[in-house]
Picture 1: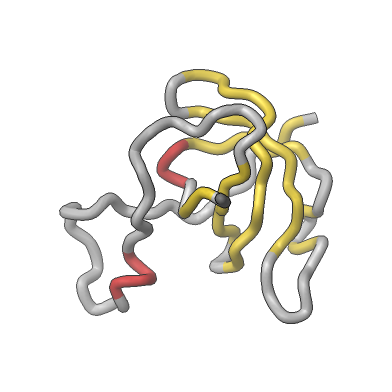
Picture 2: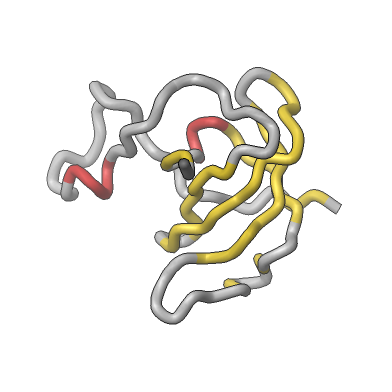
Amino acid sequence: MVEYPNFDKRERYGSSGDWTAPVAARFASISEDVAAEDREVFLQYKARRLRVRVTRVMYQNEYEGCVLGFEGVPPVVEMDGLQAGSMVGFHHEQIWGFAD
């Protein structure tokens, strides 16, 4: 079953926002190209970065993917019910970066 958690959204460069926050907290510099299947992307959930492998491109800017895990020290496999191996749906504005 695919979950749709409330992932943190990024803002595009040039958009207005809370200018008192550090730049890294406001924006993510990523390509506006769509993500392809089997590509790994970084999302944020409650300010914690996680890695997701895109398994399905639903529409031009909507995806489904498999959570690979949360980053941090120590690495975390579960956070507030979202865990590694979960299938999630997300939108392009929720992608904070691409894994190379």
